[in-house]
Image (cartoon, rainbow, N blue to C red; front, side, top):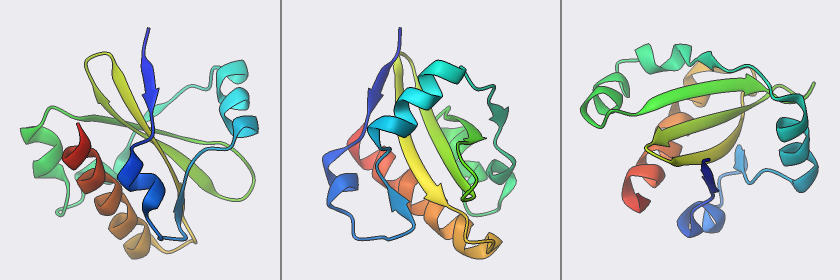
Amino acid sequence: MYNFIITKSFLDNQNEYISKLTEKEYQKFINTKAKFQKNIFDKSINTHDIYQANSIKVYSSYINEKDRIIFFYKKPEKIFLYKIMTDHNYKKLLSNIDFALKDFLNNF
């Protein structure tokens, strides 16, 4: 069984592209048992080395039609949830992923 965690510093963050999952979205995730794919973004130069050094596995899945993705930063028995809006901008998305990753590393 995994614990699903949103960190306090993450909740205090003012980044409009990153937000906490709503209860409805969380229930949808639990109910659909969505299949998660290995995150393609971990191949980015900015984050790949960090993932490897910290043994972080990152998975993603679309949760609605508004182009939002759930990112999981996984350590033994813990999954950190981050909902990130893509905004159809790859560079901005990678920046937001980096922000979430730093938050995760600071709070694990």
